[in-house]
Structure formats: structure tokens, C-alpha cells
Image 1 (cartoon, rainbow, N blue to C red):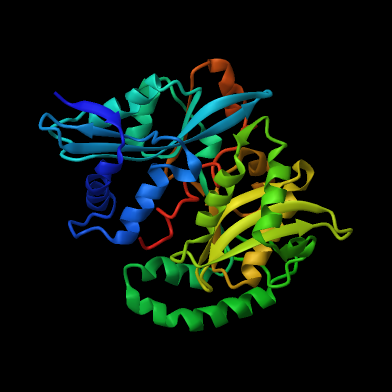
Image 2 (image 1 turned 135 degrees about the vertical axis):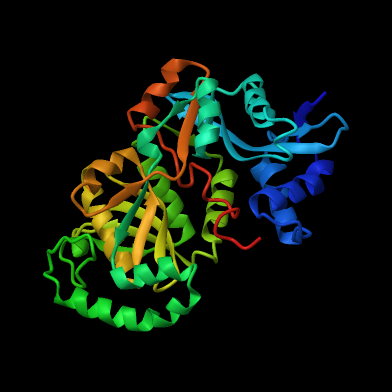
Length: 369
């Protein structure tokens, strides 16, 4: 009979091999970097007293499944709630135990959490969460894309399968630049943005360090009705990992200010010049959402991005309308609440989720472990 228990230090070699097999589709020996990172992420991360992650053992006592969990406090109406962010969910030999994933998920309901969250649920996983009375949050579950240089973007997209196309990147860049130079300063097109885009220059953008980013992050987070209540070490560890994504390129931590010097926006993205910038965090003063989005797009364009993409935040979505931004669904953000009354801020977009408050901050994405 199968068994579920909390992750232990001695389990890490088996969990790492399982991760390598399922998520990296490889039977090779896992790297030391991957082993060390999974251990840091899921055992004692940021000073947690014990692992919240769990393993599934088969009839022979061999680990055949795993669910990765990080927990933290969530502030809701002045009350601290215990929240679990669920990441890696994997089951080996699914045919032998088709309910293994569901068993792991259901086991979390016995761990006295007030909230259980995930932002990477596949269609299959989302259906399982719904059976546990979790709610799928549509406005948190979309990815957005804004094309800046169409030919560079097309070559980047097709070049993942046709590598020879990447040699045409410099030529495509020159053609895109000429087109962008010829566009009206206020032109809005699906195919690109003007080089001297007036709307994008309404804000003054400045790169900042980790200390200033942290202070501004907490300042803008205060606008959310429900939000993580980070311990200082927790947030510092997350931000440090969030910056380490060499597959995505150089990190840019930027504040956007009005002409009078008032900071009204904040964003963090990664970029390899000539490719698509990946936005991890985007926050703003409620009345400056539109200008902050314009500033982000313009800053990425000036840094050499072919396009810019990110995960939606409901409070920013209305401001994105009319900016020639496309939306698509790749994975779902889900929330389960012990008390249904706790769901209101999530269903109305007033809860802080995704980004550093989600899953993609970790080195499991954008880092060659």
C-alpha cells in the first residue's frame, strides 16, 4: 500500500533523480547544482523549521512521487494566514498509481493551511485542484506579450527549431530599426513600437539596487487587500534567486518616476539583447498603471528587446487594453481556502500573486541547473 509522508534529508537523492527524469526528460545523473538547489528550496529554505514538501512511496517503500511546497504568512484583513505555495508535482510510473498526484495534493488539506496556491497548474492538474474545491483565477492565469521588433521576434521564435535563422538576426535588427524609426512617435501597432515612443518616455526610469527594490516592493504591495507577509530573510532569499536567471539574460530592476520625481512604478525583468524580455514583477501606484506599463515596454525596447512578456496581474490588466498586448493561457493560477470568505480578494484581483509571490522567482526556471 502506498504511503505519503513529509520530505526528509535522506530522500533528496531520489527526489532529485525523479525531478531530472520527469521535468528535464533525462536519465543522466543529476548535476550537483540541481541537487543542492532542490535541497535548499525544499528543506529549510529561508529558515523554515521543517520541510512542508511531501513524497509518495510505493508498496516497496520506494519514492515514486513528490509535491514541492514553500510556506509563508499571508496577511488578510489584518489577520495572518498560513499559506502554502505548491510547485513541483511529479509522479513516476503514473500508470501504476494513476491517483498518485491527486493523493499528494489531497494530503496538503490535512496540514492546517489557510491557503494553498499554485501558478503553474496544467489543465490536468487544474482539474484535480477543482475537485478539491480550489478556484481557478482567470485574471491571474494569463501570459501577456508585446512585440517590439517583429522580425527579431520571428527569428527568435522560429530559431528554436531552425538554428540557421539566428544568423539573420543582425540583418533583421537593422530592418526593424529602420521601421521603428519611421513610425510616428505616438503610433500603436501590433507589429512594433516606435523608436521614440512619446508615451513610453512620460516616466523617468532608473535602475536600482536590491535594497531600494525591496523597499519599493513592500510599499506597492501595501495596496493589495491580501498579500504575503514576508520575513526579511524570506524575501531576501527569493529576490536573490529571482535575479539568477542566466538563460533569460541580465536582470533589470527599475523604478519609474514622474517628472517631479515621485516613484509610481516598479518592475523587474531579464533580457538577452535581441531576444524577448521576461517580466517577473510589475507593480505600480493604482493611478499610474498605464504609464508604468508604457515605461516598462519602452525601457525594454531601448535595452534591445525583440518583445516583452509576463504574467498578468488583474489590477494592471485594464491598463493593458489598447496597448496592442496579446494574451494567452499557458498554465493556471489556483487557490484553495479553508474559509471561502478568504477567496474574495483573489476573485476580485485584490490579492498579490504571481511574480515573487508565486513560483517563477526560483532558479528552477531560467537557470541551467
